[in-house]
Length: 297
Image 1 (cartoon, rainbow, N blue to C red):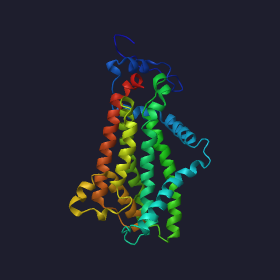
Image 2: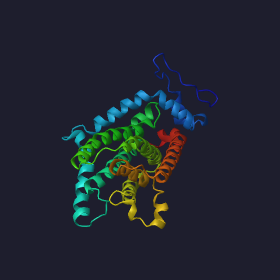
Image 3: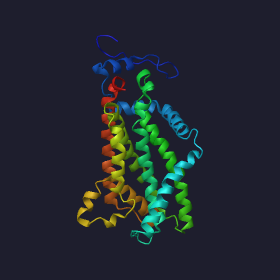
Image 4: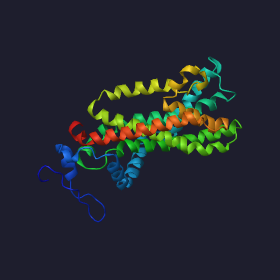
């Protein structure tokens, strides 16, 4: 390091970093190390893509280590909530579902919601929980929360098999509209990444976040059409309600999977725009403060 500037990192023929100049810059707060920027960060993340895959595999393994049921928990969580909601909202308080069996109605929403909430739960504390790695070696720190989201996506795909079985059991055909499921899922992933990148970074500086996040997720759930349909929201308030991007995502899943209809393009489009903005803003904030993590963890 010379004249307060960061020495460029050096790699060997295998692409392994052979110096710690980037770590030294980040730890000492040299201005040149601050805020790598979204474009540079994305390029670096691509360079470390193998590490992201390996850390995702580790995240899945650790999550179910010494667990009796293992990956079955990915299915049991949305399934148990569906059974509870079905008991309450099918027999005690009847919720209109447009002739869709309530178990299907609720499970189709709980499946993506569980992915969203579980990703937040595991990703937000990921930086603090891996403080030894963050302070000792260099790698793109966003790999830690992103791996938690990727592991949650695997759980989502496993739990989706139950939905396929339920559709067959209720004799609901697979409509051609299901081809849009990957598009809706992409919108949801963008939103999830934006939320966890921002919240995990803030959690490094303010540990109160670990108390705020569960409450915020619980309130967010009731502000999303999981238990009830969007049609129950008064028309004059629906535009405000749809500013919640998960509302557009959940209703779009129901449209393409259960109703065999194309989604409300206005609602899905609004969700996509908001999700992309949240993802970009969350990542930009993460990269801007990343250099400070080692001083606070």
